[in-house]
Amino acid sequence: MIRPKRKALILFLLIVAVCSSVDAQVGELRQSISIGFNGGVNFNNVTFSPRIKQSQMTGFNSGFTARFISEKYFAMICGLQMELNYSERGWKEQIEDETGDTYNRNMSYIEIPFLAHLAFGNDNGVQFFLNLGPQASLLLNEQENKSSSWHPKQRRVSEQYDKPADNKFDYGLAFGAGLEVKTKAGNFSIEGRYNYGLADFYSNSKKDYFGRSAHNVISGKIIYLFDIKK
Image (cartoon, rainbow, N blue to C red; front, side, top):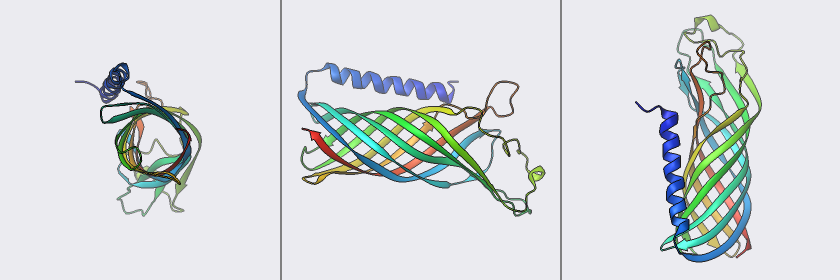
């Protein structure tokens, strides 16, 4: 059986192969550069092994976006997009015993996605787009939030409490889709994106308690870009 990390890596390599084959074809050359801002909301959870029952935890994201469009191949506009983002991740536990305890952890990251940008539509109108590629992240800080009444020994899994992340560096794959409207005042977009974590923030050797501790983030973004070269 192929492990999830290996499946994600194979998928990413296929994406790179498709993008490379498109770039290798003779298309209508066009070079435009856009920069701007993005912001939105995150819906977070963490894949743990052993499993920890969770409910959705929200956070926000914001940052800077730069996009380079290289060519149009048939109906597809091809380019690259890079971002520098601040992103709030973490998890919120769904504690169902009779203690009334509550627990969540906020984890703040700096993210750098490097994405293939594929768009379909009018140059000066509405476009549907896909963003696909890897992203690297660095943990800035983390904060536990517990109820004043606290009974960790009642939990089946309690190793995570008072345990900071072992690994500050994180990486994964990002998959996004959205709509962009191009106007004289700039380019306005909405995007839904899924970030699949490939790294574990807790050590996962055979002697460690957690075999998996990876972020899963669904985010909604609003992006504003303006052209600096067209």
